Length: 295
View 1 (cartoon, one colour):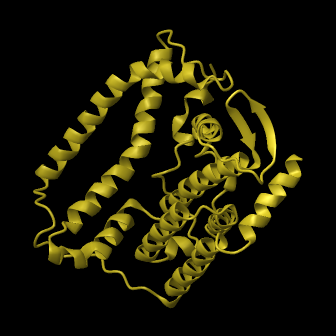
View 2: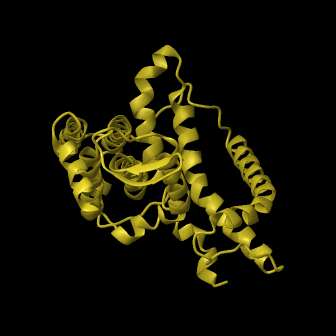
């Protein structure tokens, strides 16, 4: 097994920050958080392939403006492709998508694959890709400190009804920070196990079931290492007399600029188009194009 097969940190893009000093990096973190939440809501709510394509175009344009290599962003979804493929097969086989007006491409026993099945699988991949890349773009362009303060500022009005905004923001910060740390810890454990003769089945195509079974023994030491890190974090916070957000003052104050409002308005307009794409005839045209290609 080559050394690159153990480098999990390269493929885990969520939770990492890439400083490129782009206009998106300089934007108000509250604006980026609101834009990210709107993207998640729009992508989750829509079932239009044309709308999801527009959402993906928005995210790709964001990567270009942020000067982040597209190849690096694509690497974040590569480890999930086998599981997406399995989910897509289940979507096409177990969930009936056929009707009297669609073309049947393949039929065997109780399994029928039609153009509707192809569209359902495409929707699955497009939704997952838009969500992962959109959240990765937010992570790439915003530090964990900015995410924490931005989340707390957005949730501060909800403190009147008892929501602990500071504690919630801190929990989000710790969760995001632990994602690359867990990948790094898994990489360390895999290297230690491989040095003792363990075979994780990497580099053997799509045999992800065997690879997943080989990774099960890593769960126990990974959980123990995670609990140890959590305990160290608790001791460090107690040593600094952390008592929560009640009565705390704020050193960081954000001031939105005209460019921030313009960015948010652009995102709202594009995501409104994403939601409206399924209402018109755009998605019907995409479905007809898929049917024509497969004939």
